[in-house]
Length: 129
Image 1 (cartoon, helix red, strand yellow):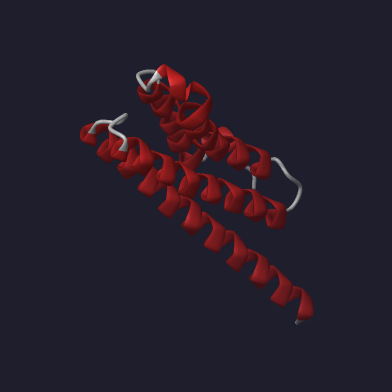
Image 2: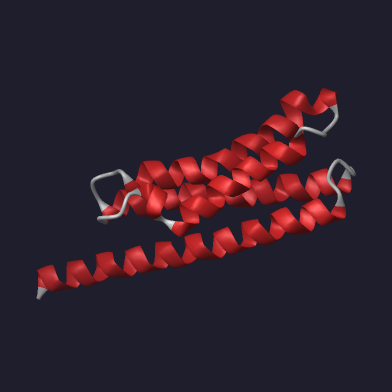
């Protein structure tokens, strides 16, 4: 890929989501600092950092692997958002806003993974033929 990771819309959106998660978790209970607060933040920043690391790798197969890790971090964040809402640490409005952004990012990651896998298959088929 010729573009840098900062040019990827999915990276931009996931970076902003991480900033948003940091913002809302500031109001979580102090006793959760090393629990749901830090875990939510870690899952959130793991999405753009894995996209960045994967995009900077030498091969598309490695990029796909890191995108899969980012996708897993998204699922983890989704769980923390649900838990924070259930524990009333997170308002319904904040939950809906963050969840909507996360769902869009997850769809984008899935589409990018499928695209890269398809490109890898096409490249492999060309080598065989």
